[in-house]
Image (cartoon, rainbow, N blue to C red; front, top):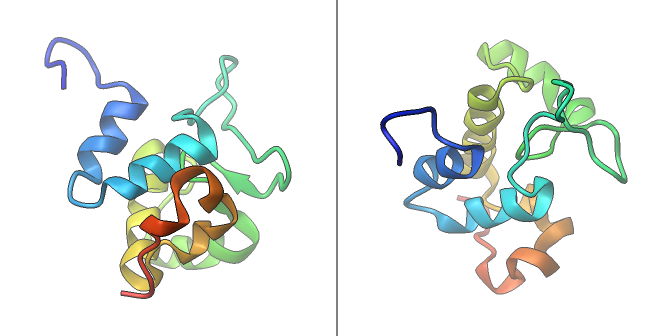
Length: 111
């Protein structure tokens, strides 16, 4: 990571998931390592607009739990932290829809 400036979204995600690199590949496939649009709006899913942020966390299914945990799905840190929570609970299952991109052979089942 570069210490003279903020890390890129990709650097942040890769460092956060250094022990589980498949999760960085999930982020690459889901959002192309983008969290915000150029105008500052959070990115949303192209197929499902309820999917938000770098990890494409679905608001409909996860916002209530994220709120209870005190995690914001709309910040980069919160989106990645909630993805970590999901990964620790369910492995890569929540992202199986994009597994053709990140490699279904890398799937980690419920943890």
